[in-house]
Structure formats: structure tokens, C-alpha cells
Image 1: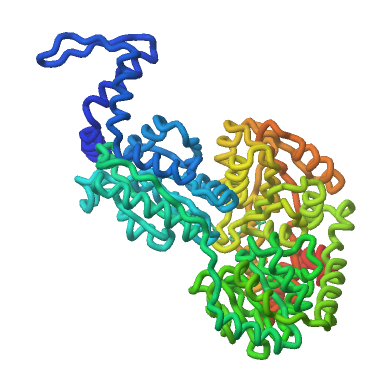
Image 2: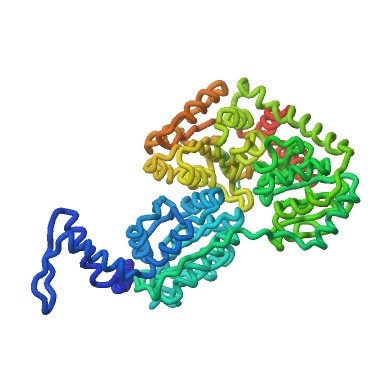
Amino acid sequence: MLYLILVPAILTRVSVIPFELLIKRAANKLLGLGLSICETGHNETTKRFSRAHIFQKETEIAMARNVADVLWQMLVDAGVKRCYGIIGDALNPVIDALRRNGKVDFVHVRNEEYGVFAAVADAYFTGAPVAVCGTAGPGVVHLFNGLMDARKERAPVIAIAGDVETSLIDTSALEEMNPYQFFQAASLYTARLVNPAQAQAVIGTAIRTSILEKGPTVLSIPGDVAAADAVGEPVAISIPAAPVFRPSDSDLRCLTDMIDEAGTVAIFGGDGCRDAREEVIALAARLKAPIGYALRGKQWLEHDNPYAVGLTGLLGYGGAYGAINHADLLLMLGTDFPFSEFLPGAKVRKVQIDTNPKHIGRRTPLDLGLVGDVKATVQALLENVREKTDDSFLRKYVAETESFAELKGHYVDNGPGIKPIRPEYLAATVSKLASDDAMFFADTGTAVMWIARHINGGKNRRLFGSFSWASMANAAPNAFGAQLAYPGRQTIAICGDGGFTMLGMGDLLTQVERKTPVVHILLNNESLDFVGIEQQEAGYIPYGVAFKNPNFAVVAEAMGAKGIRIEEPDAVSDGLTEALAHKSGPVVVDVVVDPYALAMPSHVPFHTLKGYTLSVAKQVLSGKMDSLIKTAERNIRLL
Ligand SMILES: Cc1ncc(C[n+]2csc(CCOP(=O)(O)OP(=O)(O)O)c2C)c(N)n1
Ligand SMILES: [Mg+2]
């Protein structure tokens, strides 16, 4: 049966490869072995191939330029330096053109999804587009989760998806898939190249959309079209710089009036403050406004900022929740913070400013919604808005933030004496030992709680994760992509044991081959701990979350990486110091941490409290007192 499927599949594929190319490949192989071959044509005399002849042929073919050549030339023109992925069948002409182009580093990964998460971090931080590839059907499917992440994290990733030959489209052929339907949720623009004449228009659109709208686009390319002769001359691709984008003068006047009328103002910022740190702090200084932030705003707004009052939400700490909920006026800047229950009701007037019109007003009803870039809008506001003199509101919430820091520090300060190792202590020690320009990546799971609270930011420090899409297993590939983009810079992945075994472990081999000095710090808690916490918050008994682990340090060593195992709290500092000093390749630091550690938010919503109480009651009734006692014992300072 398999034979029946595979033979026609192979034959149909082979039929699209030009005969000349087949001969050339065979000749190349033989020449590589130090042999030479003879080719006999019907009416030709015997012709001897030499290396020079092959090169000449290759040059001729290259000069003929196929569609795949046009693709790489345009991508390189637009700033693409790397392509992460796995090749095969339909992508063979694409990868051959990449090889001949010579300007793109092809990063072969062991799972396409790992490649996309690497590309997301690479593209997000460099701002340059990054290519990924996967081949027809299953390989393409592996791209999807990462492309969703690129969409949510707003990273310019361009996916090259191998597609079945044009003669097979819509015949339910082996590995055939409709790219329009499949990528609809993830991609900002999807094109299927069915004719070489489309190439420049659709490749150009994919590139410009990805860069200017900041997100993923997909080019689905059948192998026969990739290998076909290009049509027309290549067109240089021009990318405009980001435009100055701010609300109208009348809307700005309206906002200025609202601010001037308000007794107290609080600011709540997200990733949209990325380029607007100076302006937002200047506005806070003028208005005596505390600045709270969503997780994605933390790295831009927290460090060296006397107005910072912490994070809100379930990871929340400091005075952010209070400030946001008790101000007369709340300015939401560049944030699409999804947890509406932490945002104030009608008692607080609310203004939102965002470049994306779809973000306006969708999390909470607004008094004013403005479309514009935070930097340009706040700059314009600063020209007119009046200074406030009373700073008592600001001082109150800054003081609350300082007193929460004491609670936050309990398990850090006492960490060296507590076994199992407290994740708070681990994260705070990483923060202390890491360099001033370190890049930290957190897996979705409890890692996010610990980095949110215990990794200190800095002017050149960076923090990233799947914060808006919330996929597991992102940290290791994110850190790998960042390491390729910024070679030698300290890149630290804080991984869940579930996340690392889901995706990070297989591609540790890629990192070993590339000698990338990524420091992987594993929270070895033998559970999907975050889900266990969620289950309890929702009133369920934890179930389906426990598993057994190997010694990951030994596994890492067997794979050619450096492995360090830490079980004792007093070994944390030395173990991490050793890991951070290792520069010749990846390190895996396997840290056995307390699976019962909890992080209490600065504000607990009623439904969470209710769920947790219900779960506790159920656990008591079903005889699970021992784990409850452990949770209580090990979090006594927080409860
Ligand atoms: C791909 C994917 N599958 C499942 C989930 C749901 N989920 C969120 S966090 C989590 C647990 C993560 O476990 P681990 O990586 O061990 O981290 P921990 O919370 O234990 O630190 C799960 C299953 C998800 N977000 N993404
Ligand atoms: Mg875990």
C-alpha cells in the first residue's frame, strides 16, 4: 500500500525537475567522490564533464534565474539574514537558490516549530525580517504555532511553505494542504505562487506586510514554480521608515482637557511603550502619575524609573493595581492587556492610545480612545498638558510598591537555607549574576511568574516570552534565535521541565552543532506546575500534571552540551556562575525546585479566591491533605 502511494508521489515530483539539473546533480556527486562521468546523448558525441564545466553550467543556470532566486534576492534586499527550518521535496529548489545566493544563513533545526520560535525572538529584537521554512503538508503544519506567536508578539517573520506541484493542486494529493485556509488565523498575508509572473508582486507584498504591519506572512511555493524561470527583471524592494502616527489635533485637545481636569492620573503601559520610555516618564513627572505596566511593558518602563509601581494581573506586585483602580483618570498606553478584571470600572475615567484600532476599547469601556503611536502622541501632549503639583497619590503607591518588595523578597533572602530550592531565590540569583545586557527568555508556565517578579530590568537588559500567545516551550528557541542575532551576548532561557522536553531538548543538538552559548535553566519540578495552580484556582483537584524526569545534566552531557545539576540551595550561586562563564556552547542547568511554591498576586480577584477555597475543600475531602500541608508550609509567608 505504502509502495502504491510513494511511487507515484516520487515519480510526479521527479518529473518536474529539469533533466539538465538531474544530470548536474549526479555529476556533482560523482565529482565529489573524485570520479568523472561520460554522458551520451542521442545525436551527440561523448562529452566529458569536468569540475569547470559543472561550475560553468551552474553559472548559466544561476544567470537564467529561477523564481527561487528572485525570492532570495528580494528577501536579502529587505534585510533577511537567516532562515530557520527543515527542507525537503518542494523546498529543494528554494534551498538550492539560497545556497547559490550565499547571503542567508540556513539554520537547520530538528523541529520547524523550534525554528519559528527562534525567528520570533530574532525578528522582534532586531526589527529585521527573518525567514522560516517548512515543506509541504506536515512540515508546514509544524510552523503554525510559532507563526501564531509571531502574530501575537508582533514579529516580522516570513514563512516559506513548500507546496505540492501546481498540477496536483486541489486533488487531495499526498501532503497537499490549502495554505489560505490553514494559515488564516496566523498570517497577515498569504500568497500561493502558481505562476512565475506573480513572484515580484506577491513576494514584495509578503515582505512589506511583515515589516510594516509587524507580523508573519506566508509564501506557499510549489516546487515546480520555485524551479521555473523567473519572469521580468528583479525590482528593488523599498521599505519606508515608520511614519509619525498620532491622533488628530482635536482629539489631542480633548485628551489634554481630560488630563487637566483630573485630580489624579495613573499610567498603565504595554509593549507599545517600547520606543517611548523617555516620553512616558516625562509625562508621569509632569502629572505626578504612578506608572504601572503589563508584563510586556515591564522591560521598557520599570528600570531606573522613580514613578514605577509594578505589574498588575495575576502576576501582579507593587502598587500598580491600587493606582490604576483609584486614579481619577487612567491612561492606557500601547497595551492590549487581556485581563479585564484587573482594570477599573466606571468610577475611573479611561483613555486608551494604541497604533492598532482593533485594540481600542475591547478590554474595557473607554471615555476616549485614540489611534496613534505612543511616542508621537505623548510628545504632542507634553506641549500642552499642565503640570500637577500634588504628588501625594504618586507617593502613596510608590510606598505601597516598596512595602510589597519586602514580601516579594522573603523567599529570596531566606533562599540559601530552604530546600527544595525556591524558584524565587533561583530567579533572583540569576538576575544578580547576569550581565547588564543579558537577554532573558521565560517559558510559559511558572517561569513567567518568577521572571516577572525577580529578574531586574536594566537599560540594556531584555525580557521576552510568549507573553501574548502563551505557548509552552518558547524560551529555549527564543534564546537560540537571540544568540544568533547577537552572538556572544548573554542569552538565558528559563525553561519549564514540561516545556524543555516538549521542544527544547531535541534541538539542543542544533545548539551543540552551532556552539551557541545559551544558558538553559530548568525548573525541574516534575510537573506542569502552572496548570496545577490554575486547576486549584478554578476549584479543581490537580490532575494530569505530574511526571518523572531524568537527570537533565546527564542527558545534556550525552548530547554534547554542558550539564550542571543543582539540588542544594547553597549550590545555586556557584552552579549559575559556572554556567554563565561557559562560552563554548549551550549549558543545561537542571535545578530541582520546590513544586509547591506559589506566587500570591498583589490583588486576588474574588473568583480566584473562591476557586482556590473550593479546591482546598475537595482535596481535604479526597484525602490529599499531605500535598495541601506542603503547599501551606512552603508558602506560609505568602498566605
Ligand atoms: C503548547 C501548549 N500546550 C499546553 C499549554 C497549557 N499550559 C500552560 S503552562 C503549562 C505547564 C507548563 O509546564 P512546565 O513547562 O513544566 O512549567 P512549570 O509551570 O511546571 O514551571 C501548560 C500545560 C500551553 N500553554 N501551550
Ligand atoms: Mg514543570
